[in-house]
Image (cartoon, rainbow, N blue to C red; front, side):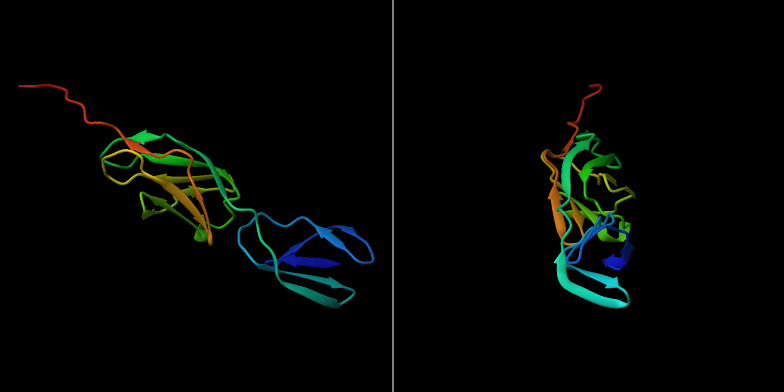
Length: 145
């Protein structure tokens, strides 16, 4: 017995005369096709499976310098397994994801000023927003002449 989810062959965990139970691979996506082959007979379900939405639980650090370049770690879950499927936005502008795993993604802040800069991660067509915004550090006067 073989089973595929989004083209990945998976082991079947349990079988009866009317059911197959399997654990899907880590991934991302909506309306994925699922198929099973039993004794050379295949069957498919179209748009049968959707991964849980990505979640963003925290960012760190939550502030950085106005020159930009602060590496911001996005913490959460369901980030998928392909860097090609991930993008992030910082105050609406697309940022490259420089590191990712199923639970962590890293972006860098652009140069800027202000507070309450919203950060999102986009996994294929699913989006999660950070629970708290990023803020640029306030300017500091170091001397007066």
